[in-house]
Length: 186
Length: 430
Image 1 (cartoon, rainbow over the protein chains, first blue to last red):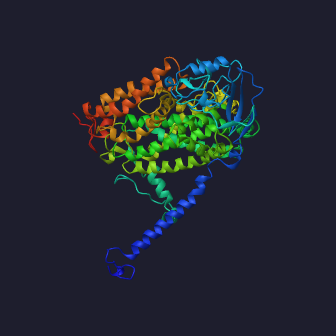
Image 2: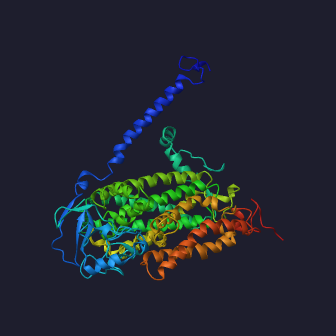
Image 3: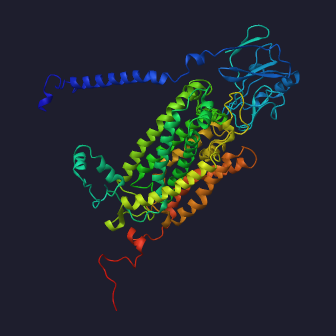
């Protein structure tokens, strides 16, 4: 007890010593310092500037014939650009969207006036394989869109999940038509 | 260390005396793996596998360090640098095949080590902490092996990384940002390859550290034994050295014969030919399969094909896969039976041989097969049994089972009741 009788060790009327405050303040400040020191170590793992610099892709869809699809890349991920035929559009619009696992209409997945161009990531929403169906002669699955060979997910002509383990439709990346045929993805 | 009759370290000469007073490292080794560690006298060959696992880790660290001297972790050259090791580096082919198959053999001996623990109840009191640290080592091994498999940057490397980091995207809300943070990009690329290399180099040393804790925790109560009963007197034990150093030495010889047979005569038996194709981010191989040691867990992942409650199938699969390992952390408290060894537990023994082992074998086969036809329901039944075994069957058995009579002591189990001689007894003469 004797060593707690100094000016710092004396209890105030509220039962708190000045030394308690110093302890809490010092440890708290050290904690703030530790968090500040860890921040760059954690932050360096996020995508670097060169990776983010690949965030836009430009392409021209004029050369894609109806029924044809091309593969391009955006952020190093495959992107499918598909020029739908009239039958494929009709097929996609015939499905009542309430029956779908991830209800969306073709119009919601394309741009107004450009419903024939379906632009999606070529990344299965299950575990990230590249589905088949974009190239000539590949298996398009039971619904005429895309088929993922890894775990058997079937997508329809609007790129919507219809059968298999994938939880959601093929992702539509952010994009816009900068002219009648030029597309800017990202 | 643990028993009062453990021999004490005696420095043999003046220099060792001088050392012992300043840095008693020889004393530590003597007490840990020398004559100063008393071990039950009845250990069978299943008790070799801890030492074998430690040896396998040493093989991996030594071959890994020299491989890293010739490997380049950059997506542009990684694949070719592995081929350079195979073709141009002196003895490079041997070092790579040792490292590649060393990983498989590390898992083989660790799986046998784990099933030894399960059969003889080594996870039970007072060795719970030994078991928990063992599960931590197992998780670290899986992370290390996965990241190592990515390094050659072949097709299976790339798509394995894509699928396994895809598990994280199943987590609601934070999943996709978390995956991008782990990869340092939107797909596995240079950033991911570099950090995997860095961590693949680091984690084996972390494993070595946890192994020290694992052995430390083991030496408090001392080793379990095939009867599962406690050591009662000095005649139940023998010193670790020379008795078990020589027994482990023999086991190590057998292990090395098996290991070298594969390394020299079938080095690619356990691998996938697709990983000799350079990574192509725009084309998925027709059939993605993990390395054999992950197949049962992969089968559990694939077993969930329907959304259930408010959680979708993908997240269920990921939860179940991680849960299948996480539940091992609770095993010491799920099994309430005070009897350790399955030799005296008739029901537990039957479920071990005819339930758990076939179930894991089926999961392993299903994991390698495409997710179609009868493989899907077969995998679902096996996955269901796996969880039922640990969460329902084991706790139930501990209540209903009538254990068989235990021997009075380890010595009695070795020498038989009638023949247990009193010390100094002489045969009776007519």
